Image (cartoon, rainbow, N blue to C red; front, side, top):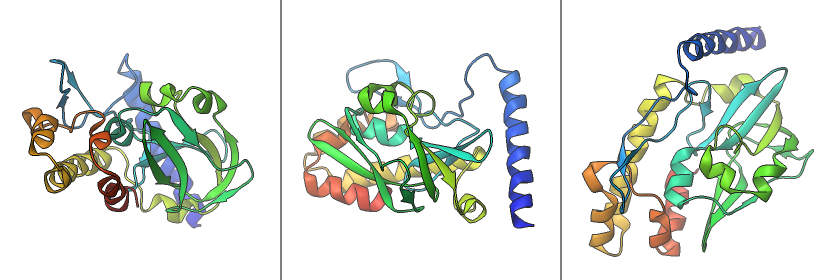
Length: 224
């Protein structure tokens, strides 16, 4: 009965999303807070597709045709890291559990460990993204997806994920919390000032300017 309810709930969400996409010529995005890059005048937004379920640890899952979940990391993480130049993923056939760190991404001399947004068996990985990690920076929700999982506890897993307008509210709170984290963590006040231009999203790559201890603190506070 629970499984049937979950399926009907997901079908409803997908139906709403298809209706929204039909009215838009662009890939649907719910924009969060704007940011100004440190050396540019143009504005950016954190991309938040409406059909994606977000884990509080900044990974995401999207239901595919049949019984499968597409999984990746979100735009917040890749921007804070300054992009992605290496990726390590679980082996095909491995069981991953929601909330356990199973994805490693790195940029320069910094790397982050991110959790599985849902439990299940890894059925495939995106070898193109592993070989060309820049795809994650270009769009972490499309060509930059990382692996496909056969879900094992879908009903329970979905209950802790954010989706649609709830995801936008959550990411705005995360950006606010990240600004507070930088204010408390930055070794140089100038770094915080530069990262907080116009009070927007911290500039891309700001984690590279923090020491290893503060990057570890970021993992504990935002990616678990």
